[in-house]
Image (cartoon, rainbow, N blue to C red):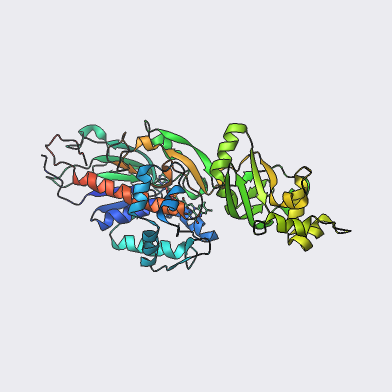
Length: 437
Ligand SMILES: Cc1cc2nc3c(=O)[nH]c(=O)nc-3n(C[C@H](O)[C@H](O)[C@H](O)COP(=O)(O)OP(=O)(O)OC[C@H]3O[C@@H](n4cnc5c(N)ncnc54)[C@H](O)[C@@H]3O)c2cc1C
């Protein structure tokens, strides 16, 4: 048996979003010396943006229903979430001085709704644990060094290692405003995010720095859809909310809200249908959405209110007076061709033809990323021993509802545990063993 490392493991975390900060916290709490790098000027830009519309941290539904929200849930994702379930996320948030509440939909939010007080408290806790954060460090690659000794010809800045302890296993390279730098670490957690809202930092460019790692191409998720509205809708109704509606696609029906945009629809109810819409677009080049403008009234009751003679009332006025519907409802009804059904039936099931998804630029999240096959059971990249991965950069997908952040926090912690186990198994110099955590 090789001797095991006796000094504090040095763990680099790259990406200061929720997954990276969760990894940093778990590793530092376990006693590791943790350094966090991000190429933006300050951490967690996307988390702060998420807080603008109300930070939906997690969801209160039962565990199995919660896990079923992740499309094709990999057992490793499920295991990470079972180890850090929604209640743990809530307790963690409260432990940072941010009490949470559960909304009528079961979604859990910090009372402050914003992300900034939570992030401030989180960074202070990390500082107290000795975590060092380097901004404006753009990670460009990693080399795996021999665990028992670094080759002399690397030309890197030597890692600070004391005599008698193993040189650090990884050489991580960064572009900074002061030029290229190399940082040595025993293990690294990459938490570089997906590819949506690239101006907030996660631009997906990391794919080029991980040659040999299978990556599922990024596609927009939790994003708006494109619908070819008439000029009337585009010019008069863009920005109008559709409140208390239901939308269905591919056998999935969700209740919620949406907003008419110049190019289509966006909002929670649309985002929740990302996966079936994407599937239909992939199969047929278009997807049909079914809009129920009055899901809270059954078909017979609505027929009694809407299908009688409307006299001299305009359609919009009739829908408003008899159906309690806003003017935008009449405009949308006029968009769909007459199909001979009574008005109430059209209000309950209005077909909308979706021609595409909004781009990654404005999508709440992306699907795609590091393929699960590229990772071992502890979130380590098989092609880069000692390098772990977490968060949205892994190819899982989930609707909004707190599932994204919960999975980021849970996989960040799981990757940190993998990295700690890897470090614990690193040999002393002079032993030829490859670590097998
Ligand atoms: C408008 C909006 C609202 C949202 N609302 C919610 C919500 O209410 N609830 C919810 O659950 N989720 C929400 N999300 C999604 C959630 O914010 C993301 O899923 C989450 O931030 C992903 O966390 P992450 O740590 O994996 O990646 P990110 O938060 O994207 O962090 C990745 C980090 O890596 C850094 N990085 C990338 N490449 C490099 C590199 N080469 N070198 C160094 N650093 C690099 C980036 O700068 C970034 O800081 C929302 C997203 C948006 C855009």
